[in-house]
Image (cartoon, rainbow, N blue to C red):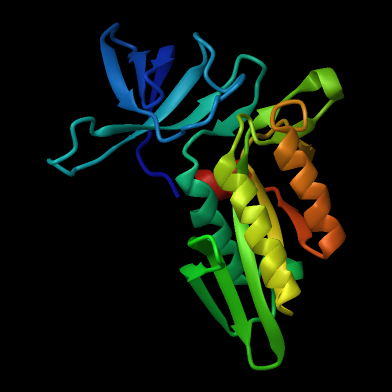
Amino acid sequence: MFNNLQKAILIKRYKRFLADVQLENGAVLTLYCPNTGAMTHCADAGDQVWYSTSNNLKRKYKHTWELTFSKAGHWICVNTARANQIVGEALRRGEIAALSGYDHIKAEVKYGCENSRIDFLLSSETKADCYVEVKSCTLLDKSFGEGKGFFPDAVTLRGQKHLRELMEMKQQGHRSILLFAVQHSGIKSVQPAGHIDAKYAALFEQAKQAGVEVICYYPEFSTVYFNQ
């Protein structure tokens, strides 16, 4: 997925979308940060940062923060857009067994009564349509136990809306999937972050009771992100 990434040391993240890093030659560079979340333990000063470079001359900041290698020794993909890319590739290759066997895969399809777009709509002549909502999970909180991951890392009205939409699709007779793309090498399991967004956690449990399926997908960093 990544080619020619450059390494730097994180100085600080600020204004949500910006981060200053120090290069090996001592120079300071400002990166675009494609993550609107809290990025708890994913953006600590002194962490290694890996960034890509765009050739788009219209971009104000041509360098994008892609990965963090934390001082705890974990790889983290902080670019939330990568979650849909890796899940889309996995779906097309049939690597997610629970979602295999569909003839057509469409991305970003409008659906629901709250003006949403589903990340992936899977369809087949022999199966009910399958609506797949992808969420990037990077919050590791060891205070709850080793390897415990949580979503979201901040209150998410958008995420709450998506759970309601998935329940609506299930009620209409379709298959509804909430898929956590785990983009933190230290996370071994995922659960709703009720201590951060109690309403999301309550809707999550309601959705499960309504028949919405929950899948965790754990991409291998060496193969998915570095093609090794």
